[in-house]
Amino acid sequence: MRLIIAEDSTLLREGLVRLLAEEGHEVVAAFGDATTLPDAVDTYGPDVVVVDIRMPPTHTEEGLRAALEIRARRPATGVLVLSQHVERTYAAQLLAGGAEGIGYLLKDRVAQVEEFLDALERVRAGGAVIDPEVVRQLVGRSVRVDPLARLTPRERDVLEVLAQGHTNSGIAERLHLSLSAVEKHLNAVFDKLELPRTTGYNRRILAVLHYLEA
Image (cartoon, rainbow, N blue to C red; front, side, top):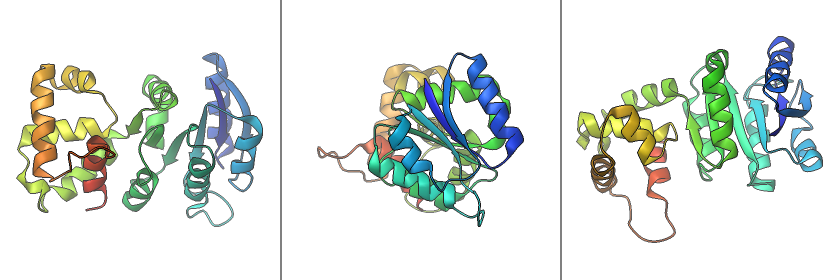
């Protein structure tokens, strides 16, 4: 795949460039700040953009703002956001416009090469990838507040794996459940969260957003 990397740490940025090249991917551009990132995406047309949330000059949310602008300009471009720590508000902002082709990973996850590469492939394919630690913390905070408190432990397990961007078959594999059991648990989650069955709404995305914004 074709990628652009925006990461102010020279060591991490160059390491990612080398890793991706070794895996047969093409890094068409790499930046130490996010200032020109949206324009570069228009110029190079990458499949996926990897961007740190906190970038120069203020090291607050420059990367997040660039990611949101990229999503607005080119919604078909995958965006994988990296963060040093769990940023609950930022995760919610990133997913608010839809979770297709979106990833949110803690930087520690990059060291787990296979997981990182898998996340890139899933984002490129239009999937959603949320770091398991982000999900764990957000679910842990949210289950104490209704209506998430209505969920059974197994339903919370299913919601947690769903929030990591896995399909029903992926959930079944990780939790050692049948597909029919996964569908049953998901329907129970949707009903308990009072998510609409009407067309035009993706209840899987709404379920994730529900606790991210709780």
